[in-house]
Image (cartoon, rainbow, N blue to C red; front, side, top):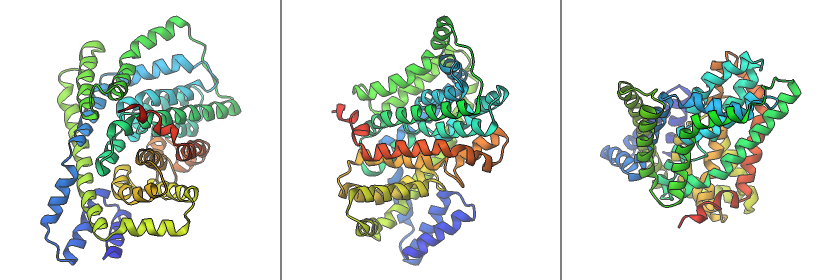
Length: 423
């Protein structure tokens, strides 16, 4: 029955059916063949989405869409370019810097690639950068989004196994910053080698002016991170604060968000939220079947039978998550794999928060890993180049990402220091 469950799921995925429906159809097939009442499907789906923490998801999605519509993206790019545009390959470095700032608004890699890439990739090509480099650095930097808080995958992880979403949020801050600076360094190295242009150094007055223009974007990240870290509000409350803040800034500060735009933004946010909720609900049904068949215990036993060396086990977990992340949607992969692999990580002494950040980072890197990383396709499409060209150009950035991943995996204080400050 378990073999049938997995085979049907994999076949449906390769036939092009959306992951959520593939999970649902394979789960229903299992229920039919085992004479389990179909009401179980409704019960488990409802249980999966009946969580107060998941209220964060529509909140942060709505806030991010409001800020994007309100002109925040252009201001972030202008400030980043004024700050580092004078360095060789400065526009590429500004691309990464903008992603680090934008991360606190969007919380999703795909939104980062599409929003920033639509502006930066054509701009970099006009300035003399190769299209493959522009697409590669844009796709790579987008993986920072779900690591630096707020993060939709972190919300899902916390909901799945009862971990503190606040601690997961702040645990991703240092790894996200390290990843950002690592990608900047590689971007500078490649820019020097290819002799890419650099802009002129901006005066302190220009930098200050762009900073003042972007300060409201920077403050949003500050409010969310330090509000949660300081215990002023929960992640769910933070999402509501973010919505109110985004409305205020868009309507009354930047004045690019109009009242007539709000219904459209709200509908877009609802559609995105609904798709995530359906996925979480159906994945919870799938996860219940796995649990009832004791698949997590079997996987844990299988991995631990290979070796009892913690270093080997951690490497195996990373390889598995990277592989899955290269072809499966992040939230679906988390819902299916995280409850299965967490017992393995805990059995070798890993903190659940530490493993949560490592798992999310793995799956984010998977979005830029050939052959089917979704961010690769988006960046290639914007850049007007083939996926093969982007794949070749992204390999150095992928190497940097994996080095940072190994640091996160084997140096626990990088993820656990900030959460330790939360009581």
